[in-house]
Figure 1 (tube, rainbow, N blue to C red):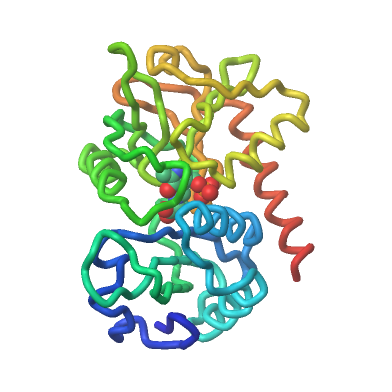
Figure 2 (figure 1 turned 90 degrees about the vertical axis):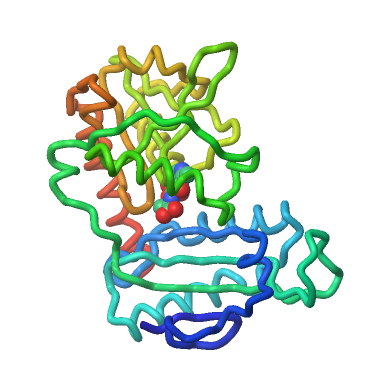
Length: 285
Ligand code: PDD
C-alpha cells in the first residue's frame, strides 16, 4: 500500500517517520478520518477545517491546504485501488532534535495521509442494531480535538469488544452521578419520543456526522436539545443512535442489559443520511 508523508509517496511499510518525531515520543499530534465513497470524500472540507482549527489551537502548522489534501487522497485512492474505504490524516508537531517536552522554535511538522480499505464492520449491525457497554471515560481535557492520544479510547473499545459489543458508551461523573460522553470512536444521540437529545459538546468531539444528522433532524421539524445527558435518563430513552464517519448512522438496540427498539426515528435518519451522502457524490463528481 502507498502512503503520503511530507510531500512524498512511499510504501506503507517503509520507515518514513523519524524516531524523534514528537508524535512518536509525546503523542504530540492530531488526526482526522474521512470516508471514501466511490472515490470521493464526503464532507472532506468539514474534516480539514476541524483539523486546521485544532492545529491552530495547539500551535501547529497544517502543511497543506484542502486542494492539496484532496489531490493526494485521489492519487492514493487510485494507487491503492481503494474506491471505498477510509482516508486518514495525521499532523504531528514533527521532528525535534532532542527529546524535550518543551518544543523548540525550529521544527518541521509531519503530515501523513493514508487511504485504506474500510475497517471490518459486520453489515448486520445496520439491520439489527448494535450493542454497547458502559465504560468510564478516562480521557484528558482536550477531547474536543482529535488528538492522537487514543489509549483510553482503545481500551474502551476493546473492553466493549471483549463483552461481545460493538462500542463503549463512556461516562464521566459529577456529584456521584454518571453522565454520558461518547464512544471510543463514535458519538451518540437519543430520541425520547418527542425530541432528539444530544450530549452537549463539553469535552467531547464535535462530530461531523452528528452535526449533519442534527441538521437533518431540525429540517424534519423535530426539536433538538443539546445538554448534559445523565446515564439514568438513557434507560428511559426510546431510541439510541450511534454516529460516526465510518459507522454512519447505526441503530443501538442494547446497552449493558437494557434493550431499546430500532424505531422509526433511527430508520428515517439512516435513510436521510445515505441520501445526503448521495448528494455529496453528485456535487463533487
Ligand atoms: N472517530 N467521537 C470520537 C471519540 C471519535 O473518535 C469519532 C470519530 C467520533 C465521530 O466523529 P465524526 O462523525 O466526525 O467521524 C466521535 C473516527 C471515525 C476514528 O477515530 O476512526
